Image (tube, rainbow, N blue to C red; front, top):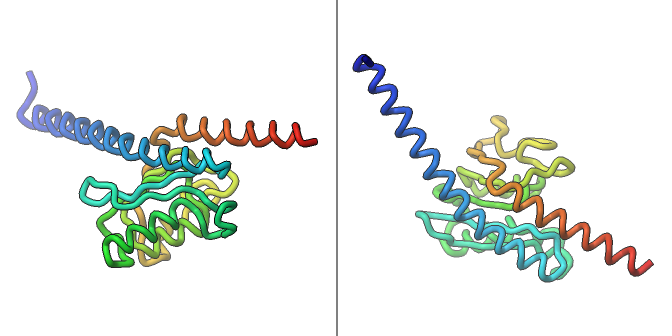
Length: 179
């Protein structure tokens, strides 16, 4: 027979598990939307990276990679979404938002996320060559800065990685056909 303390601990553990499952479902729901944005980039032959920003359980901004189309190094998915979210909220501080992105942010995007004071970042696939949310650096969680983000990684990671892999395989095939 369980003591009162053991029953309470078990109840708390079950509540935490339910909350974790609910968060995972929420993360997956919005990462699916970020994947739709990534598909827009894929369809215009851009590296397929997509991003959505959520406030009060509603998507307030979307973005996808457009560097080649726009001829701009700044045309990253996260930057586009942050700009749109700032316009919609009327503030450069996005302190009550969550950013979902299909690929781990680069140093520029991680810096913009910190500057915008976004409290939570949810990442699909990690980027071992240029990622700045833990792979190469972790700008999002450097305590030397005035803002540190909560970070969740690997949400729909397989789907995000598969889209990137397919894109680069097709790009290599196109280059080989030209040669």
